[in-house]
Length: 533
Image (cartoon, rainbow, N blue to C red; front, side, top):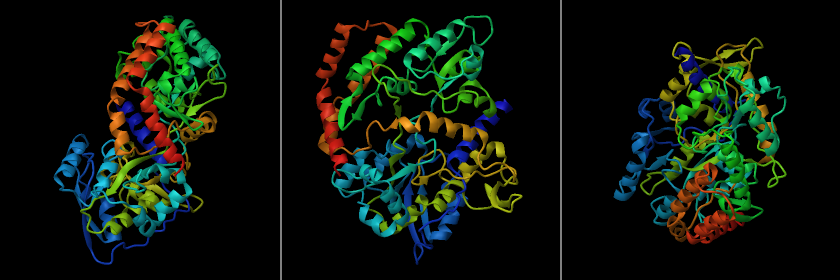
C-alpha cells in the first residue's frame, strides 16, 4: 500500500518537475502594488475541497503584493457549472469568473453573454493593463486568433501550456519493454504491418514467461485513448472534424477511416486487440497491466498501468504513430497547448482594469512560479548547492515529500483546475541540494517526445468560436452524429455489423441524412474566418 502511494505521489512530483517549477532568469513586466488604494472584488471558481481559498498562503501573499482583496466563491467542482449558470440566469454575478474552463464557460456562452454585455470585452484592457499576456500573444498569434470571438472581441483569457510534453493530446501509448526484451525487439514498429507482426508475436511467443497463452497484445477502454494514435496511423488527426491543407472534413466519413476500421477489425478478430475492450473499466485494464498481461496500452506514464517505478518505466518505449498506405509519412496528433474560459470579467466588475492587471502576473515566469508553488516558507525554502547556486528545497518541516502535491493543493488554487497562466519547463524543487535539475525519467520523457511526437505533430483543428447561428445549426445533430459514429465503430470492429461495400455505403448515407455536409460546412466557415483573421 505504501509503495502504491509513493508511485502516485511521484507522478505528482514529476508533473511539477516537468511543468510547475522554479524559473531560470525569471522576469515579469508587472509592477506592484496594482492598486494605489485598497480594492475589494469577488470571483467565482471551482473549489477542489483541499482548503478554503481565503486561507491559502499564495493568495494571502498576493493580496499584500497587489493591494487587492477578493471574496472567493468556490462551490465544489461537481456543482460549479450549475452555480455558474444560476449566477448568469439571476444576474447575481461576481466581478470575475476564474478557472471555469471551456467545459463550464463554453465558447458559445462567451459569444452569447458577450453580445448581451454581461461579459466584458477584454482586448483594450489587455493592451493597457496586461504587458505579460500581450507579449505572449504577440509571440503566439494563433492563440490570439483562437481566443477572439466572431465579433472581434476577447471575452475570456486562456490557460497556456508550453512545457515540453504539453504537445501530447493525451497520455501516450506505451510498449511493455520487458516483453520487447523477451522477444528480442530492439526497435519499435514504424509501419502498421510491423505493428501487426509484433502483436502476433506478443500473442504467440509467451513474452511474460509464465507458460500460458494469456497475453493481451493491445488493450484499451472503449478505444477512448488509443483511437487517436491508431487513426493517425491512417492519416487522420481527429475522430471528428479536422483540417487538411485548409479544407475541413469529417474524418469518420473518409476512406482513411474505413482503412482504420479494417485494421482494427483484423486485430480484434485475431485476438490481438483485447476482447474486453468495449466492456471493461479502466480499473480492469490496469489490473491486467499489474498482472503483466498486456503489451501495448495507453496511460500518462507507463508505470501507472504496469505498476513499475520510474527507473523501470524508462525501459518502456513510447509508441510512435505508424505509417500505412493511407499515411506514407508519419503523422502525430498535437494538443493546441492552450484552452479558453479560464478568466472572464463581468459587467458587475468594480474595476475591470485592476482585475486584468491582477491576472496578468500569472502569464510571466515569476508569476507562474508564484501561483504554482506559493511564497517561500511553505512548500519550499531557499537553499544553495555545492557550487553556491541558489536553489529551492522542499520545506520538510511542513511538507511530507511523498505527499507534496496534496500539500501544494492547500496553498495555491493552481491545483486540479486550469487557472489562467503561461506554463513552461522550469527547474524542480529539490529534496537534496545536489539532486539534478531534471530527473532521468523527465529526460527520458522529453527525449521520447522530441523523437516520436514533436517532429510530426499537427493540431487537428484550431480552437475557434462559432456564431450564434452556427451554434444553433450544429447543436441539432452534433450529439446524434457522435453517438452514431461511436456505436458503428464498435459494431464494425467486433463484427456485429460486417464491414463491406454495402454496409459502408449505408453508414455514409446515414451520416448524410444526419446532416454531415452542413456540419462540415459550418466548421469550414469557422476555419476560414480563423485563418483570415
